[in-house]
Length: 360
Image (cartoon, rainbow, N blue to C red; front, side, top):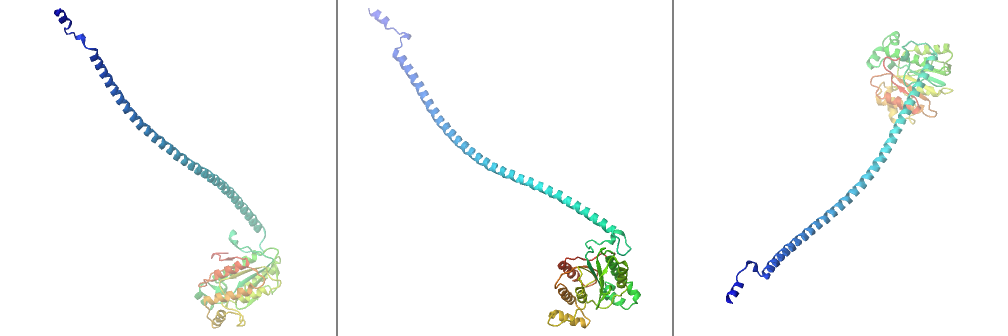
């Protein structure tokens, strides 16, 4: 009996209690649960971090997109302005091209007109015949025109030469030598040129002047079509010799006294006057009175010559203004002559030129 019980209680490895097994299983389950629960906690934190990063990235992207859109809007406005400016530039370029075409057309027409006028001038015979080399007979900027034309021919001693000392020496030479002096020959050739270019249907007169004024048409108007009288008047003017001082005022007063009055005056001279008219001391400035006194003593300064010119011009311009042009020959030391004669031409609508030494 006892032996039987002993057998029943003997050890069997397969007799582990169910509780032990369950405990082990339960422990494993708990361990797995803990592991799983811990893993779930890490995934949640990471998810929060990722979610935060994503939100930040979205916010950054949205802000960047807003900036990009704003800049695109600015760029669009700039592009619109550029397009507008390009359109204006194209219009301006088109206008420039049109103006250039118009300018070229005007230049061409002007050239054609000049050619026509030149042809007309060449087809009209000169009033008198003068020698020369073709185009050298023409003087740019000076056109002889008018219905009644006066030539004022300076015949003062300074017309002998442009150098003061040479003028003094030539004044003691014979009349033949004076008449052949280089500057005087040039002055006479200039007068010839002017007479030769007179309009075919006009009247003219020649006045020479120094201390006095002489009419070479006997105080009358000569028709340019009367070649005999034209030649006589010209030869009369060419036969005189330069001498004495220059009373420009007296010459201009003689022009104003002509009846009917001229509508064009052409002056051949080399400088400012050295003599003025002795008027009432109340009608002239103190400066001019002093100049007249110095002139009477044989001394005349450049400032005084300018003052005498101004006095003569002021008297000349009273009333009707006559178109007055000047051909100015050179004279040493007379620096204000060019500007004074230029102002006279400007105020009357004329021209002042100083031709080259070998003209005409």
